Image 1 (cartoon, rainbow, N blue to C red):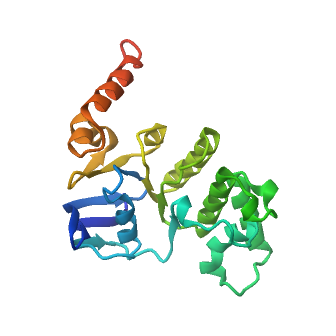
Image 2: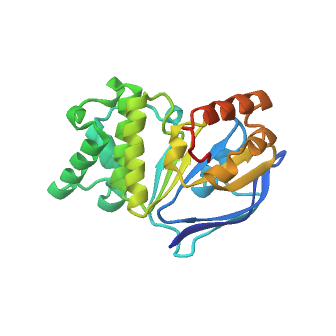
Length: 254
């Protein structure tokens, strides 16, 4: 399987605070990495480092096949100004500017691509609506349509399910599953342990000055979650006891 990028001996933080040190792992095509941690553990900082928006303290990324010309990126909702005077279809079309250019009118084929992306995201019916009229879920669907238009081999999503309902979350997770099945690599920053993790192949847990990477079930253990200050002992005890109680009799606990 093709390696999209390699993290090598990465130390990340700021002059007065080290978030973690000496992290190494690979991300391959067709894998989805969940990045978790308490507030301030370095989740968004890790994404910014991947986008080359900040420099690591040491180490960094290797791109075996070269850095992709296009990286799909969806920032946290709080970083997006929904007052910008633009329609839903125009916001989605912005994802294609790398291929079409800002000043060039989209031809019919490009317009059809925009409509297809809006349809997949579930917002084609409001394509001509200004974005300041959208609900949080509608805006996030539109931003997903913009990422679809980027058609990138690597996709970075920073807390994409904040302030959306369960129906929207399920719809967007189906898009993420399609990306993975197409052989794209997805890095997904999530705030809490949820059904989102059922759609991820790998996990990176940050916190307590450490970074732990591996398969989801191997990383998200009570010992790691407590030791890396993601949750208290009582929270971990309750969560894993509840999970065990819902496992059907005779089924294997994972």
